[in-house]
Image (cartoon, rainbow, N blue to C red; front, top):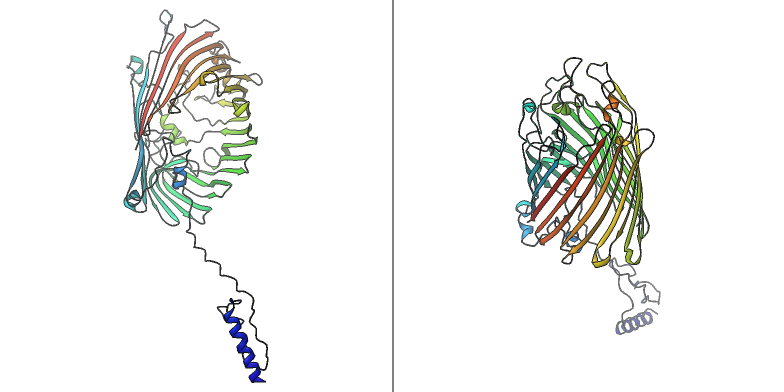
Length: 582
């Protein structure tokens, strides 16, 4: 029987080898033939072996990039991005092994002058005797993967020169400055100057930088980013805090003053910790910050958060908030911006937002630029820059915009904004003549229509806005009516564009008075004014690396008070900029 069984088995094996293979042997020898025993059956039709799945290559860890630049080639090669003037360069094989330098140089100039008739004998002229002028040069440069390594750098600096009005006898103590920048003087500003070393998970920033994720404050110091995951990055920073709003090295660390006028040193420290997050549908950051004067004022500690969320293709939500916890401002919601954009269809957009802005500056920094309280009870000067008054303004806005006609040729937009300023009290230096000012409320209504493809390829439009009081006192104590018509057209297939407009507005003071000898609230007066303006803008892309723009406007202002009508004032405003990118 064994001989018969062996012969039968041998025949089946030979037949199986001569036919197409019907079974494969597993790597682990499972299903191997059992040649032992008296069993005359032989298994030759096994279950086919499943092919091995190819091993997926291990994906490289990719952290968030919080340097504020597009670092992916896809974004720079995008058809809508590559021809923008301020766009990041794309690395080539050559530049990837050395330093990639990119940036721009822009020159800007502004001028304003006005003329008007005399106010009367010995009263001077209705127009200002000062002409305003400044010219500015700004350089922005990025250094990517310096020497082909892990270091990056950025420099953003500018210089502004302003004209100095002629001094008069009245200017012997306090020089006259034109209205420009931080305090009307020349500015030598270093906005950013930092180096960053990029690692697999950590980025280390050194130098002057903006902490945009945590309240957008500026520091001279160190920042560390650590990628906890691809979606979450921890942020920590510390350093010196220049004067808020400073636009020049000459005022970044000017001597500080306490509320009583005594010296408070020059330096303020700042530090904080938080996290930035990013997913497919949302991104943002949250954390806490401490700003600590070295003397004369308690530290300011606040929590901050900002974010953006997209729910499908119809709804966008965003927010920015600063909540003061400790400091001279006490516990208060200092800054809040929140809103939603809703797009139910391709032709309709609905927006809503709320904004609250309060005073964020430190007392010791603001006091450095405020005049001290006047000596004596019967001062002849009205001082409006003696003490800091923290005063929040609130605004709620809703708007609708619709595209009508073929290819949405016509755009119709309307919006309404409610503004509110709470009541407050002006504290007199002598503590005896305090003035209580009532709350002010107002509504702004806007309506506009635009024809995108009108006659002669023009874009034509008109808009009108109206602000009015809610209650007795209008917001900023004035009611305004303004209207505008404009026309625009592209030049040379989009290389440039010109725009011309005519605008007219009227203003009317509300809840004013005629005499402020005994009541400060009466000093606001009652006047009606109007402004007629005509002018235009020109934008032109000279070539891929050069861009220019300019505008020129002529306006005529009239003011009528309860006592008299001032002579009309004619003003001329001009602005020009030319920029080069490299």
